[in-house]
Image 1 (cartoon, chains in turn purple, cyan):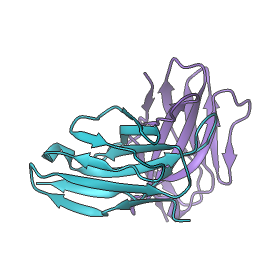
Image 2 (cartoon, chains in turn blue, orange):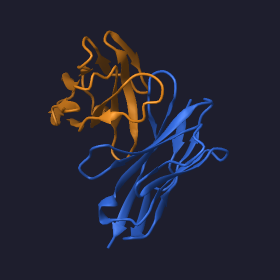
Image 3 (tube, chains in turn green, purple):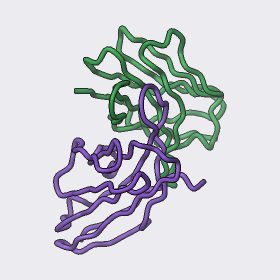
Length: 115
Length: 114
């Protein structure tokens, strides 16, 4: 079975600072994918970034980067130069590479950016 | 290109009533999913489908039924609604095979059972 753990229920950060949201995972699958989604107060799920378990380099998408440490089973999201619009819930998720792409989600971290 | 659409956006049900949550995607995706999100929690998979006529249970299927007669539609049926089914329901879809990066989510249906 796959499991995602997000240990930070809430984070408060000053605008323009960088922030790291923690995510650890557990799986016995040799190949898997890791995702981060953003859920603003409006409720929709917004895909941010993806990391494959066999990718040699950490994924980056604009201000988002994924700090992937396979041996430690961690996939932390780093947001550089935070903005007020980054205030939202953030979910880490994972799935097997093969077969139906069922996502397993963590409980989320609520990020608040202070001006 | 509308993506994944869900109806209704909001619904209040009385205990014991039934309803169908509608989900349609126009991206010709084979895979479709239903998740529920309880307050303050992450999403949990209810049912999924890998193609028309093929469905399977996810993590929390009790109290729900699904069908998939077409590629586009994946309705979720609630029979005998219970307060524990108060949640936000998300439908999602993705293309098949290999490493397709993301699932495309609908806007969600907020359901209250009283």
